[in-house]
Amino acid sequence: MKFSKLSQLFLVSTVGLLVATLLTSCDIVTIDYVLVADSAGTGTGSAGQIQTFDADQATGALRPGATAVPSGGVNPVSMAITSDYANLYVANAGNSSVVHFALSGSGILTQKDSITATATPVAIAVNSSDTYLYVISGTTSATITAYPLSSGAIGSIVAQTNLVVPGYGSDIIIPTGLTVLANSNAVFVTAYDQSAYNPGGTTTSNANPGWIFGFTVASGGALTPSSGSPYKAGVKPSAIASDPTSRFVYATDFASNQLIGYTVQSGSVLDFLINGPFRTGNEPIAITIDPRGKFIYLANALDSSVTPYTIDLATGTPSSIVNVTGSQTDSTDTQPVAIVVDASVGRFVYTANHLGNSVSGFELDANTGALAVTTSTPYPTSASPTALVSVPHNNHAVQSVAP
Image 1: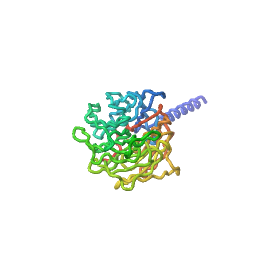
Image 2: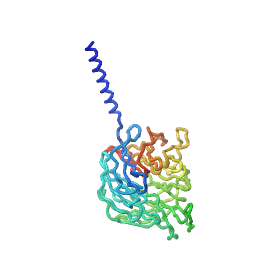
Image 3: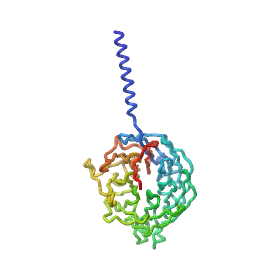
Image 4: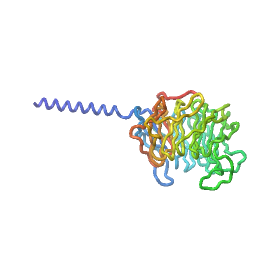
């Protein structure tokens, strides 16, 4: 009898160890890091921070990862990362800084150098060659500035241009978004003319309100305006993205609830897609294209939703994707303001929800682009997230299309 009890105790202990081992093996398998810029506190002037989340390989679910680090300033508004995922840049509107961080393969951020922008930064981007950092800035005027990069470090200004609508030189131009072609040959900036479009205020201009400014990147980083630039872009363009083949550019119109598409001709010249613009949700504010160049995803601030589209690879025409759940929209937490497709396998979509203090997650169907929510979404963040980027874990292969 005594031997039997000891045997039972041994058996129970063995089973317990086995269960614990299985549970450990079922822990999150990281294929990605999602980095989120937000405020560490809730008060005006609160310092910014960068939170790191680990993403699960099977489900896309997020959990807190490495310890959050200060963003190097106040009110971070935009982030950009180099193509080798080794360097992260954060634009802080509160102190007009752009801060450089080194990023380890395990998701650890280490602050390096920084620069002070010539005006309040709005958005930043890095070219795919990792040779230039572009900053658009200004709250009463718009400027694009190019900084050279050397092993991630930010150098002195090599090009700077004010954005002016021809014939309306005294108008107030407000920049909103920035994209660099995958081939690094051109840069495009969205902006609107506040003198012509100013809801609730006065207007003093009859200019077209919405614009895209195009630039060819010349030798040494010089920016040469594209022929015909700036190009009309609705009423209040709010975000811009280009596809991985450098053939198409898309801009969201916040005021008119539409997506405007362009073909890229002669390197940096834009021409409207003939069958656009295309309907969106209410107040589209952010845009991303999946790494294979097959799908577009928009974040709609007023609807708290994501709108997905397929891209006709021959013409660039976006077509709305039907939500397979039968609901009209893919709902997020409150007021999404940034959106990204994961850089590892292109299977998951995440939004930073400014008023929800969270990140919402979706899994995309690789064949259709349709979305389904990830496990336990949304994922809590600190106060007022504004930007996010996706980073592959270590050095495994990533989804991409060679331009």
